[in-house]
Length: 505
Image 1 (tube, one colour):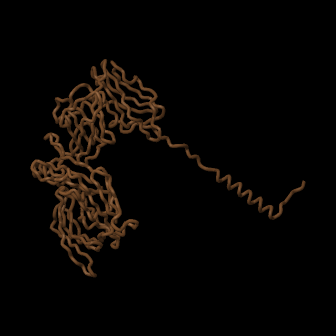
Image 2 (image 1 turned 180 degrees about the vertical axis):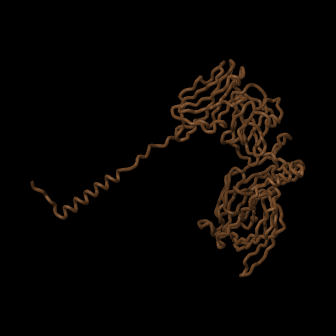
Image 3 (image 1 turned 180 degrees about the horizontal axis):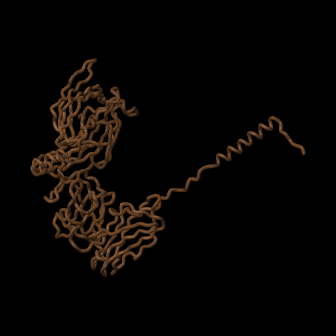
């Protein structure tokens, strides 16, 4: 047998060829992608008993889907109207969702409507089964009237998508919302819109509730409430009949504590957690060469306990030609929030400041006092700000006439209110605004106390109206901005800045 042995150049060629084949083969090997992501919601295949039946008492309704499903927050999302004395039982197993209602809870000649909200989702991707309502009647007709409207957050004037809108019998007084569940209820959608369907021809009192514990009863505290000034009359076709504005009620805790016996007051004080007095402050001291503090703001200390004045003082100075120059300060204890202390002064641009805080500036209700504090920080310079000309429609001008409300302009960032003053001109100028996102609102100040006043349920007092601007505005350093309150913002470069970087203002 003869063997052929290639020359040196031939062996090199074969070696390169084999490497190329191996590399090509390895490049073609890849992990499977798993296919496209499932974005389709579950599809309803059947429902038993059938939807929209008359003269039935449907005590067990089974929905069957084309894929495995799961339930999310069913106690909140699934609503049976009229509201049952005992909630229905809702379970999800494999491809089925079952609703069970005890027969004893169903009334004669009544149309029942079960809405599922966003409770039903596919098991793997969480795609939400779209809005669906199952209807049946224990009588020989269907109630078919409707009532629609919108829910706003009274303090912001923006849609409230968390509210539960509730109907009570006309004969009920306003204490019904704090004593018992409503007769009918629906949830507002993402735009704050609510829509009742399948209502009988009756007159109702209407409320909206930000229901923190999902019990369909107004419990006060952090929950918010809204009430309609007029009776709700269901109609044949949908129309936006009403706007409800949910508001927090203010409980006078100071009066309630003052009425307690001394022994009870001591017990309340002793119940405070025996922990150190800690705080947060809006100063960045990490780099004294970096401009971080907005000189138009106040230095804010926020403590973990309620505090009051402890007798100590503060000292503020800045570096001037190597010497410390002291400037006067003003200490304010926030009356609306007894955990805050504000220190204000006339700050200069781009200066290195030193703040010294004596011990016992504050004391909490348990007798704890702050330790001595010392901070060094630098203020922002002119190029760190943007400017704004805000155009306000003349209809929001405060006239000062008896019987007419004042109009207050409120300018806010995500964390603070920077401006809240009576509108006296159609153009308001802000020459120095720190880069941030800003929102603008008009408060219709009926009682002329210079602030927004919330409502009162039992006194039948609606909250003062808040009108939000049609858009928000992002302020950037070095930019001049023009903003029309009822129009989208018009950012523009400042004079002489066109084509240059914003920091060159």
